Length: 222
Length: 339
Image (cartoon, each protein chain N blue to C red):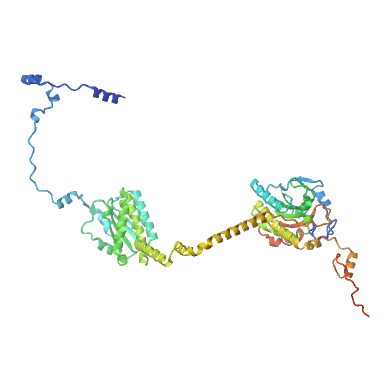
């Protein structure tokens, strides 16, 4: 978990970045505090001709069919600085109301791909539902697949490739979660309190649900 | 319109009048028959049939005399051009001091021959003579060739008669006479003449002749270097093909015919198995295509004030090809990124 502004690691449930003090309120001040209505494919930078747009839409539909609880959104615009891209993505996924996304899918189940046509950079932002399952490296792999196409100006190809790779990663995560759910649960456990830590030390670092071994059978030294 | 009407009228005209016998007798007795010269069928008295003339009692011509009469008269090359033709080794590949070819044709043929000389190791010299011209008897062609072409690049020399390609003659420079057989020379000349005779105009004939001769020279070169002539190579190819076929043994169809009785009982089960396998693969593909995936919904505490999301993924720059993804894997703030 990283801060969208300073890209430093932050702890779970941090109200604001302990390094730079960033929070959604700051992003609201920069980009606006009201909700924004837009479609899940918002090509405000005009990077996608009509035919390319249809291809991207088809890829997004495939993804949404494959993962019924999730949705993917793509936004292209001119943001100016690479540093702003993360903050904008974070802000947009929290403030956007996607017209063509069913209401039963909250933004927490969304993955947003933001492409900045001005600084020629792209980045992923994802909702809390995906927090335990997606890592920075996964999203980097998706962007790497798209990179050569974007270098050549084939934005649609790049987006389709990135979505395809994202689907591949998530399929894998679904299978892993099916086999070993706890592995992902541990990632989102609430931060350990001091008392809990002492208790765990005393209980021999056993997980909280596990009962303490009975001392009755133990040999008592004379 | 006028012509059909006239024809119709002529058809409808009454027949010409004729004398009846009595009137005619009376008139003949009076000494004059009006219109007798025009209308009478009888010939005029002075033009009455003469006795047939007797055939002349002369000897029939001999075959030699007929041949001589049929042959067109030939002329010798004017003496003033003999020097230009036969006095020295020609400097150009096309020798036409009489200007028998027009300017354009002469230039085209000369260009072709020069280009040929650039591509080939054997030069081609073409002497152009008139259709009916004869080389004077005192000119000995072989001796001239020996004298002029004994040194220098190997050459083929052609005496070509405009409009009569069949009279052409081919000579080889001494360096080639040993390596190119007389039969090959004859074949080259024959095929060139045949090509020329397919054309009707003299200039086209010369062009076809020279082009074909150029091709034959190419084959001569290959033959000199140990490769077969076109005729031989065709025969060799056919022989090689037959040998290869023989070596390959029975064809696939023949082999299959031998195996079929053994295989036939298993064909149906194998086909069924393959079909079942195909259906299974298709079903698997269809099932995988329709399969959906669900992630477990885990409780995540909100952070940074965001109600829905705070998951910041990677950012990649595609501004420059000199900045590959590998160098961007470490996601750090911009101020820490090496420029």
